[in-house]
Image (cartoon, rainbow, N blue to C red; front, side):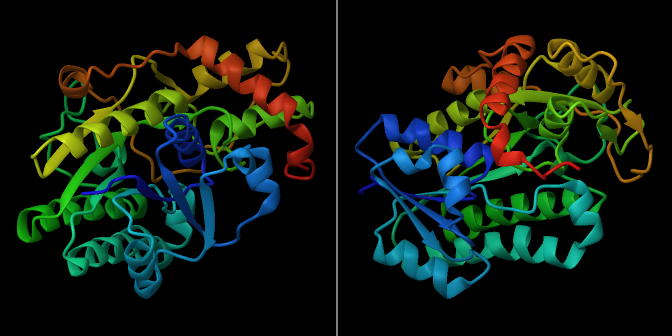
Length: 328
């Protein structure tokens, strides 16, 4: 089987861009990205315009014919399905759109692979939120998936559907359930880290939707991209049809603590965040046990929070012009 042709959905997102750069270093890959807009400014700021073997195709994985033809015509061997509605608040406001994208979009990819009757490896991006509320010290891969709110449920359902296609139709798939990803290349100002950094760079106070007491498993994007790459390599060599891994860190802290670290790193302690405490659809505490992926793939988080936050701040400083007008 030829695995050199790779499709990445969500390739212009923070994780997709980082993963593409990692794949490009191993230059035997041809990389295709399916994107709705082919936004040239986004492509440039993410420095994807410099990657010769990258082809960005305008389209949407919510369209079955589009995804089927792309996988078939480009002879795709591996699909990294990272594309999704990823914000809890967006899912709350638009549950139908969220379920269509996160669940039925995933089914479109699975159906395409099933109907092609050729082995295509799917690496699916799940989430720690698929587990629902944490009972115990940390989530383990064998815990039941039981999301409560629209985003969480969309990830629980899609995750289980991927597993169903493996067991029923012998699709070959890997699933990664990661914590809160941060780092260079996150262009979504609704997410905490870019919002706080850009606000501080513009000498403005950031706004927290929650009470700031939520505990999250924060992990640097380069570490997550490495986990996806290692899982792909393992899936190519392995006869196992399904592998599921948690990808987390030891950097488990409250939203308030992370914001405090960011503004301290930027010498902007006076920019105390405004706490709205308006979000009532969040899991209180999340922490992932990643011993399984460490044992199987020798993966572990290499970046420390303090250092990687500095790397992230420096990236936003260098690309501030892109974000002009994003925060009033």
